[in-house]
Length: 77
Image (cartoon, rainbow, N blue to C red; front, side, top):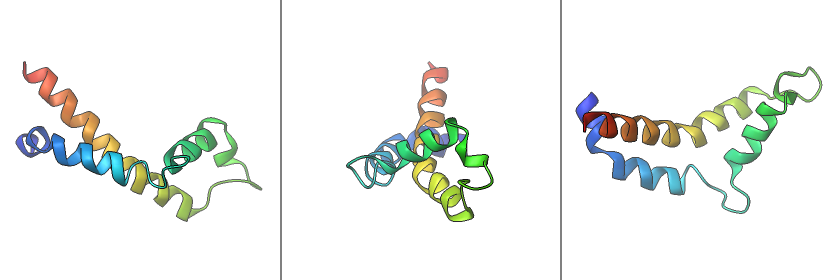
């Protein structure tokens, strides 16, 4: 598993730049992160729905895999 994460950093980079930043103006993940960090994601009236959390997972997943892969490759050296 670790070897696959180390070797596939190019795939994770491409996924991050395409799916992770889609739609591109502005990137969707930035709006969701602002929503979460602003504290409104957990409020009762303007809180995030299940589809919003899935959206964060969908757009944030490639970035998480990319950061894990970079960390493993740097730690290897």
